[in-house]
Length: 118
Image 1 (cartoon, rainbow, N blue to C red):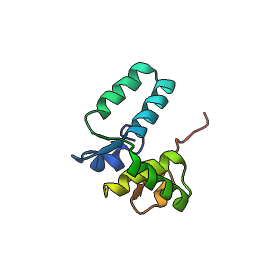
Image 2: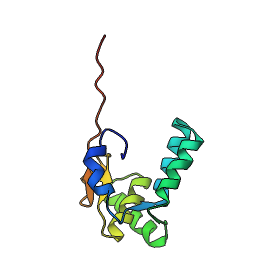
Image 3: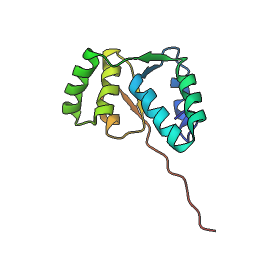
Image 4: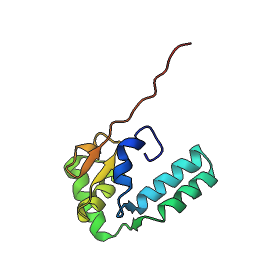
């Protein structure tokens, strides 16, 4: 989000001194970047994330995620991220429309690139 087409929209949120990053998000970011851009880029991204507050998945988060997943019909990863936000009374920035429907979420619709014919 920070360097994508929504960068201007989320810039104010990313300037916050208290950004929480669930360990699951670290996993997803590293996995995707390693596959799409290579290990060096993925490792650099994780290095940048380390400057933020990394929050672990514990029993309390897991049990709340289970409840929230059933309540909102969310995938496991989305449920866990939402549980972290709910427990910490935090806002959740997302590009996911389904997750964007929950009260804690600030939803940014994905922008598509314009394709023009030559």
